Image (cartoon, rainbow, N blue to C red):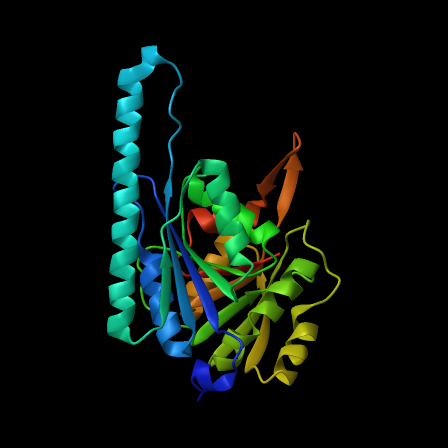
Length: 286
C-alpha cells in the first residue's frame, strides 16, 4: 500500500497552473481542477496565472472602427481572465489550499515569455492539453518544456481529479527519458504500481539501456517498479496509449523531444501524437 504523496517527500511544494483566455468559449478547464486537487493532496502552494492575450491595435486614424472593435475585445478577454482568477482563488480557499492568483494581460510573444519565466519558479507546471498544433497553449507547452528547466504536466479533458496510483514510464534509454523519470520521482514513490515500458520493434529507438536495467535504479529510490517490453502496434504513441489502458494507468511519464525543420523547432512525433490524443495526464521533461 503506498503512502500519501505528502508523506513520501517534501519535493512538490510549489505548483503552477497556467490558463489562457482567448475568447473562443471552448478552452479546456481541466488543468485548474487537477492542479487544485494536487495541491490539496500535497499541501503545496498553488499559483494560478489566468492570462489574457492582448490583441494588437492597428495604427492610423482611418482604422478607428477596427481599433474600437479590438479595444472592446481586449476588455472582454481581460475581464474573463480576471473572473477565472477570482473564481480560482475562491475554490482554493474552500479547499483549504494556499493560492496566489495573477491575471497577466500581454501581447502574444510577451505572454509566452512571461509564463515560461514564471514556470522556473515552480516545482511543476500544469497546462490543459490542446489539440491545435498552432495555438497559444501549444507555444506555452514548447516554451515551458524546452526553456523553463522544469517538468510539465499536460492534462486532457476528463481528468479533473489528481490521481497517480498507477504510472507508466516510457523508457527508450535516452537522456530525456532519464530526466523525466528523475523529475517524476515524487509521484513514482507514492504510486502503488510503476511500470517501465520499452516499446520494441521501432527501428529509430535507441537501445543504450534497457528498461529492465533502469528499473533497479528506481527501486533503490523506493519505487514499486516492474519493467516490460511491449511490441510496437501501429506506432509508439498508439502502443503507449494501449498499454496505459491495459493497466489502468493514471499518468504517463516520458521525455520530450523536438526536431529542427527550416530553423524552427517542433515537438517530436511521439510527443506530438500523445498531446493530440492522450487519455491520461502526461508528465513531460526535456
